[in-house]
Length: 310
Picture 1 (cartoon, rainbow, N blue to C red):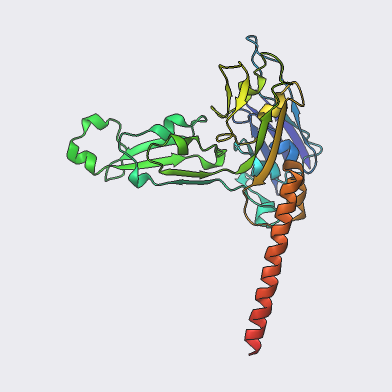
Picture 2: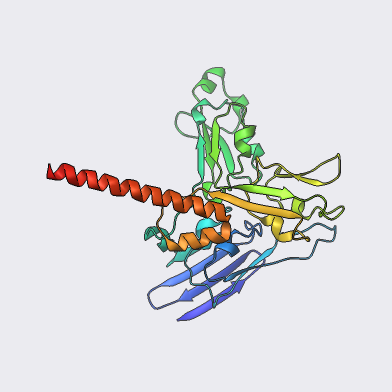
């Protein structure tokens, strides 16, 4: 078996090259925001975050993700849980998540619903509001061809147009900004990660804006004119932890994840990941929910057995 680790300013690529299989992990640094999700979830502790020096104008930078080739086993958990779709694991060139296929690890749910049939023809609010530029609004003719200039059409032609809203869901951290900016409420989003983010203003260094500098979601953190301090708008926060990683004072910023939206799973691997990602209360809730569902299934099986006998 041959192994390889290549790094550029844009990507980090790890490989296992076997006779019949080629395992590859690719980290897109352009999409990575230096959050802590992958490092916490990795069962092998192969992923580490390195703080980067500030820019010449004094702004904090996203932490740099590094992956230890000797520890990584290409399980794909980092791929599954990355809120920004920055990591991809492939086998022989095809995107492969064997843990999901074997039902030993859940998938992250990105529940984004758009009713484009009711979208106003001139509206592009959701596209303009997306902080990561993941939304594209297109007007289509009856033959499916896109319209470049609405003003070039007659009123009759405009009546037959359709609106198409494309969202890159694999990269969407479900911040919900598009939902609240949409004037008609035609976009509905459920967050993938729920939690609590608190800034202890007494311990926050005077004039420090490091967390605000690296926050990928515009509006989740903001600078108050009243006290010149950074405050949190949890309506848009995705609880990725990019802010926590760069905070220079450990007790100045507190982050707790209370819920992760995922597909059903029965797995010890998921329980361990959840333990590192979320609060103990969340773990207890999920385990109790699993216990209750198993009890219900057991009762249903007994009833079906009795009915079969009768």
